[in-house]
Length: 81
Image 1: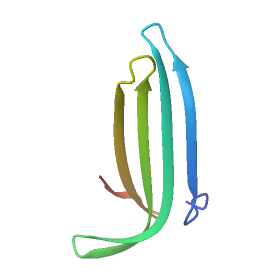
Image 2 (image 1 turned 45 degrees about the vertical axis):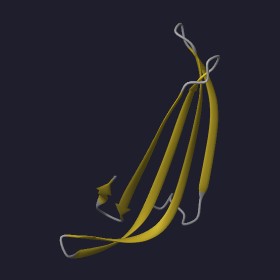
Image 3 (image 1 turned 60 degrees about the vertical axis):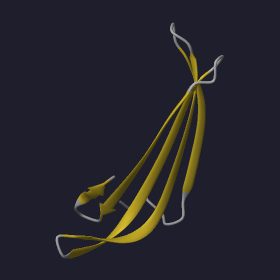
Image 4 (image 1 turned 180 degrees about the vertical axis):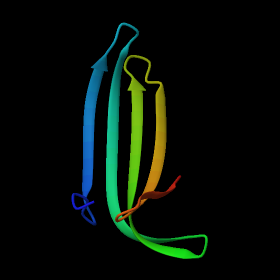
């Protein structure tokens, strides 16, 4: 948990070549502090937002997904959406 820092942003951009096609994969991670309530219990957490976009080069077909995880110190993931 000590490796996460509030306000940190990381972006990656990679091209993967396969026998079926070439793909551009862009990933973005954002870390923010946040409070979440689960079953009347409040957790002070890091909220990690991951956005991934995969584009098939040539025809431009895109697939995207967004995942948000809340991590509490000493517990791990307490919520995932």
